[in-house]
Structure formats: structure tokens, C-alpha cells
Length: 249
Ligand SMILES: NC(=O)c1ccc[n+]([C@@H]2O[C@H](COP(=O)([O-])OP(=O)(O)OC[C@H]3O[C@@H](n4cnc5c(N)ncnc54)[C@H](O)[C@@H]3O)[C@@H](O)[C@H]2O)c1
Figure 1 (tube, rainbow, N blue to C red):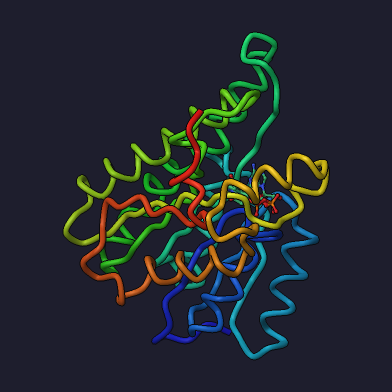
Figure 2: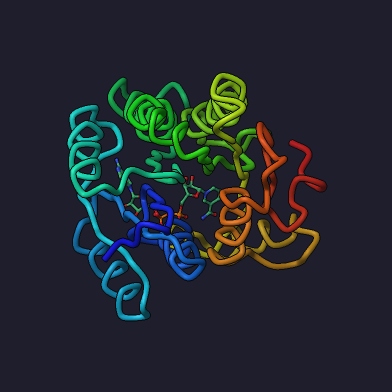
């Protein structure tokens, strides 16, 4: 399954969308991928697909908000000699609502899954990343920099992901590089319920005149995670088709 010469890459939220595309791309580039998600059935399908294509992949149940879950994954990967040299923190949870109508539980879970999990991943695997001179890529969002109605907890968490990535890049340098990507409007299932007006508005904001694909985000994540980006750390890279150049809220 895993090869001693390949890097193990852990991707959270990799059962669907951008995370799954990233797992496929990293496997294609030769990494041994750990697909960690709360949706184990879908994670298994992605791992099966990667193995069928000749890559190395396993699926793991992980709720990124659970400290016990991270500890159990660490034990499992350590015993398999597959501690990660790359981590992509991609899982998220969001509830759209005016800020004052959010329950304590919904606010806390959004911040826990989307932001606190990034800290948990470094807390769990900093020694493995350091030993391997590894890298971390955290998936933030254009919401880190711009406001849209209903996204208070999501925006706060994503802004936190950018700040935390910068902070971790300093604390774990020079051995570990840490970067963030800020996707714009990307065609995944989270857009399934958007109406035509919402989709058209997103497209109008992108100077490239279309939504992005999960593969287009995965390509940038793979680059930042790889040695090709060996002098890039603490960066927050938009992958938004130019949306950040036009949005003024
Ligand atoms: N699609 C977009 O337009 C867009 C824009 C900006 C940022 N993003 C970011 O991209 C990332 C991926 O989003 P996506 O569009 O691919 O969404 P998606 O729903 O397709 O994928 C999210 C994945 O996270 C998993 N997940 C949710 N909660 C989890 C938990 N507690 N523990 C582990 N896994 C969990 C889900 O099962 C799913 O596999 C997210 O961080 C999101 O904020 C997406």
C-alpha cells in the first residue's frame, strides 16, 4: 500500500468536492493519501477510485472537531508508519443565518470544525511535519476578506484560518511551511441549492467570467504543499477567478 519513499498526505473533508479533488491530485503526484472525513462511505469511494487508478489511499472516519478523533488517527497512522508530511485542512461546517439568530451551538460548531481543527491538526502532527520538513495548506475562503449576509461565523472562522496559518508558519519555521488558499465560487455540492440569481452574481464578480472547478483549487493546494513552493510560507493565495478584484461590499 504505502511506499517508504512517498509522502503521506492527510486531507480532511476529502470525501467530496475540493478535498476529494485534492486527494486525487496528490495521489496522482505520487503521495500516499489519507482521506479523513465524517462521511466514511463517501471517503471509501474516493479511496477506492484512487487505488483503482494505481494510487495509494485509505479512508478514515474523522470528525475534525473531536480531539479524541485526532488522537486516534495519530495512533493509527503512527502504527502504520504513515505519519503525514503534508496536511490539507479542508473540512468545514456552516449555517447561514443573521448573526443574532445563530444558536450558541451553531456558532461554536462552525468555529470548531472550520477553525479550531486547523490548530488541532498542528497540535497532533507538528512533530511528524517537523521531522519530514513538511507542509500544511489550509483552505480558507474569500469570506476571510469580504462580507456577505448570513456568513458571520463562517467569515470569522475563515478569517481566523488565514491568521492562524500565518501564525503557524512563523512558529514552525523553518522546518514546516504553512499556507492558506482562499477559494472564490467553486462548483461543488454546496452550490446545489443556489438559485440562478445567486450563481449569476458569483459569476459576474469573477473577472474570468465563470465559477471555478474543484480541480483548479486542488492544483494550487498541491503546488503549495509540494517542494515546488519551497520558498512560499505564510501566504494567503486567492483562487477565485479574480473575484477579489471586483468585490466591494
Ligand atoms: N465551494 C465553494 O464555493 C467554496 C468557496 C470558498 C471556500 N470553500 C471551502 O472549501 C472547502 C471545501 O468545500 P467544498 O465546497 O468542497 O464542500 P463539500 O461539502 O463538497 O466538502 C466538505 C467536506 O467536509 C466534510 N466535513 C464536514 N464536516 C466535517 C467534520 N466535522 N469532520 C470531517 N469532515 C467534515 C464533508 O463530509 C465533506 O466531505 C471548505 O473549507 C470550504 O469552506 C469552498
